[in-house]
Length: 534
Picture 1 (cartoon, rainbow, N blue to C red):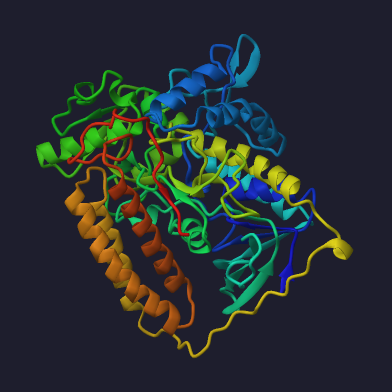
Picture 2 (picture 1 turned 90 degrees about the vertical axis):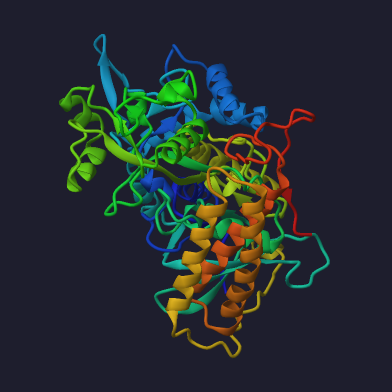
């Protein structure tokens, strides 16, 4: 059994920030299921939203966030995260993060861009690879910190709680089990303070902008441990994912629309004005539904994003990664529109937390995309996600230190955690069965629980997922744990939570749009969809 003052699960912006902050107070184990650089954060293109200009204000940023969130944002949470943003930006800069700048009247200032739903330019960026820049600098700082033990290729399996061990005291976390993929052994890690920063669940859908690691691990683990889950029906579909067989998961940044790109149909004509007065800069839920409707109306496989109205040098300078990726598959976006389709991108719900990332389970915090703080409500405002990561990660560590002060050996309560028992589990020799079930989950979620839903489709999804859960549980108990089995287990759990939440919401709001209830329910105040295990 390995003991630490803190355990952080996940190496995106939230996990890395939390680990760095926690390392000032004690020993930290930072687990990541693959390499430290494999995360949703590293794939983020657009930027991080934060008030930096005299033409902007916290009140404006709060108002834009509330408008996008369709009545479900928690205003006090939004205001706290927005107002603490500048301090976190300054910290990132001190770690070497290089946000793009421009010269104005002889002095240098941040080159702010604008994205859908924002009324002012407030998005800081590093070319069109902001997430990679932030991740690289945070990883470098983590590797240089002696108090952080970086455990790559360690897949967190399940949380260990007092309740699971049979104690009658308040249920709280005591540690977790993790699969060391290098050795094939399951290790036991002990800590009273655990931060989940595992990112989202985009891989539960057939088409997604997310990397392969985004399999809903944190939500599934927290749910099995007894934590409260909220608002999982709100899955944001990014409107513009490159439509090409060789680049299925490549995101076309919303910043392109902020710099003048427009959405057009196969006839070359703009169509967004028919759906919203803000045109191509409407919030993501509106744009994604509009594209979905246009594809179904015209029978075409995609729509197009056109930035040919901008000079070639401007396009290449601002979007070099997108330009070269498109060019690699034969699309010169300076001369022709980019074919795009919506794809699953971001979960606005997750493990229910307060603004400190604190969950209903003592000692457990959830930060970043895995947590549901109330910042995003029913629809995330573009580029608020990285902001939430760095702000809430700091607050979570401070909260844990306040509620569970570090105690030295002579005053701490000792728990000897049981080692992992494999019993008579056999080695799995037919991965084809795992891949078939994985594929079935992703297809049924895309067909039945996608941008536009109906009660009948959701019920069909729920029925099939119940059967799949039984099959997956059989795999889990009868065979030795592998990454493939663990990911499948978490995928089916997370998919079930999404469907259960969607069936409970009898209205259309934000990212949840159902043909059976096409309007918001105005008969009562908007409320979260909450799932409690016990």
